[in-house]
Length: 378
Image 1 (cartoon, rainbow, N blue to C red):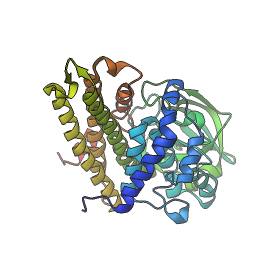
Image 2 (image 1 turned 90 degrees about the vertical axis):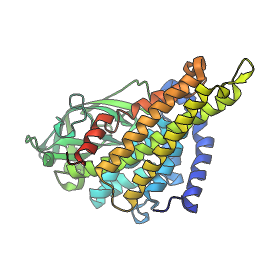
Image 3 (image 1 turned 60 degrees about the vertical axis):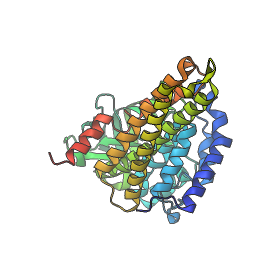
Image 4 (image 1 turned 135 degrees about the horizontal axis):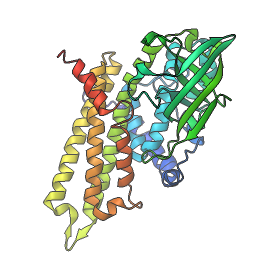
């Protein structure tokens, strides 16, 4: 493995940094305060080519590797985890299964407009009474003339309030087996869908919804791939996305460290800079060391994706380590800032709220530990 980023990857990082500073940072505070996402950002992302990072050029993507994808996610998260989260839910979870298993017509109607930013996607998997047990989902799809009738509920669905379509997981058989779980592309609005926007502590400007589904009709041509039993596609999508989420967490941690270094250099207590106190310097040292270790596992996991050697255990290790590092780094950032750390004019409180999301979302830390333990053949 080459332990350096290529010239092209370094160029991608610089391009995304400039874009984030010019186009995203000016929007962050107001978006967080109003808890609204600027939908026009998707078109800007599409024009920049980052919505199609992981897809081949012949499919309408930009054909980049997973390392480049993680660089993009890290830099977006450095400025705003909420913006990065909305993009992630759209560009991977919302459309990767369509690219992987969709019909030619489904790719033309949904995948290509999503990659260009002309349509916004969401991924409807989590449910109110299921938690992390995907196999236990209760939303049901029953076959009717010309399509399917769907009933159930989905919770914590990123982009749901602004989505043009939702890739929805539902049970197509009463049998409690994985092969009875299928995916449907549901165009919005749909009269059988009632979407309530949720208010959150973290990633506030990434709009998240609670969905009630009552006798919603979905035509046959919106069953993913025209086939039932697409549960393996869900697992593949989640596994690779955990690596992306690990990169998101790395971006949050870096922003917390750099904000803390700046504060420690500028803030004085008496005649001494805050950073000259050993207790503060040690916190910064721990943050720096842990972030560096997280960086290696994140980009090792990304390299494994590119080598087609990624396992559930490696993806879970990257997600577990980076999210927990981000949580500690952002808490330390608040402690270093002292009273300023809980003031809205400083961003470290937002960083900590956002970091909390990823020790829960995309599979809790406990779920990651379960997956890692299985690989140990205990």
